[in-house]
Image 1 (cartoon, rainbow over the protein chains, first blue to last red):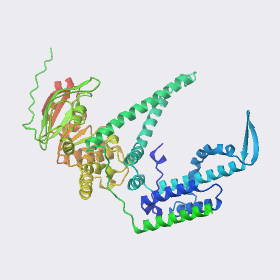
Image 2 (image 1 turned 30 degrees about the vertical axis):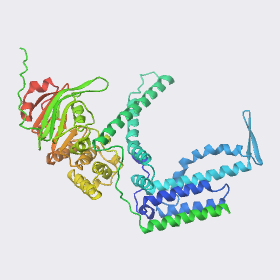
Image 3 (image 1 turned 90 degrees about the vertical axis):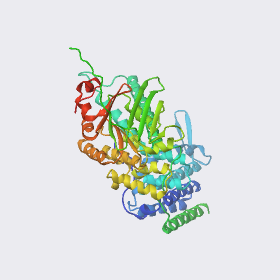
Length: 263
Length: 251
């Protein structure tokens, strides 16, 4: 696997690409918050949110269905909410038996489940779009400008930088194991399950040790260049009047969404 | 016939150590492994010195002492400043230490931020930082890479950017740990030309004896935590018994 598997940024010129990263980050966060706050079954508001999302997709020049396609991988996480189907009191719709337990799906439970599904699905799409139209370092800067604590942004920045180094390390380990996973003629390759589990455990430990030692070396490289517990960056971004207009427009739409959803 | 080791009589060039003076440096790692036993050496302005010796000779340990990342017993003086807690920040601006693995050296998301890291921490104003980043990138001929992401670069490119990250601090001494390790011939050639053209005092640890012969007039040989020879490269490379005794090869 290559780093491209993680780098979702698409290098094209579009209205959204040119926006200040702060605007994109704020609008995405407000959009996600608004989705979370919409009441169950606010179908019209969900529709508005979806149209807003489609507009964003359109402005990104990535194609109307771009975020939809990518959002499918995130859907399984919504299944965590499946318990609300059975746990909200309401009129029973159907009951089924699973081993010795009776499960009853209620109408209120179904309503909440579908609402949660739609909310998370809309939110994930906006986040996917954000990462596709904003370079990651810019996003980190945006968070810094938005007064996110430096410790958090630093952790995110390091994670981003070393994720690729770490996955490379994992693949090197896997390759090394594979190339020695031979079989003598006539025998089955592989050994027992416990033995294999032990090998995998050793590899995980090995990975941890290597990462730990690497972090030591990185820290040395940092203090060698004057690091004393504080990270500094230059401000490469400037809010233009267009950025303010877009923020105001987006926040207004999201506000209207809330009004539609509540009344 | 018994082999007799002549007490080596290489003459280090006359120098009073105005850039770097290390005197009787001892160091043991916390696990008890002792790495340096009384290292002394002097570097003067404009010196380009190779530091050679087998793995485990203490080369990297010595380098980590030069800007106070490790602190052993003994004296280290950089550009006339005694290395101690008070002038550590000043010394770190004077000594540009480039680590062997560029992935350890380049920790920022973009090339620009990495090169700007040192100057920013020196508290320089923004214009000055930008100017220094530009000239450092120009010195390693990588100006087009300003906005690239570090993990998208090749090893050779990472090495050159790693050098730029310390050049931007305008150091008076450049310390490189095995700069040519893992480079393909073309990247190695680019690096050699780059090091030759940099008008700066440098101490370079390496196993690449061809590089030593080509680039460095002076060589220091270390083994088992001691300096065993210090002199003109052409003299040292002629002394086969010395090279053999310390696991080195004639280029």
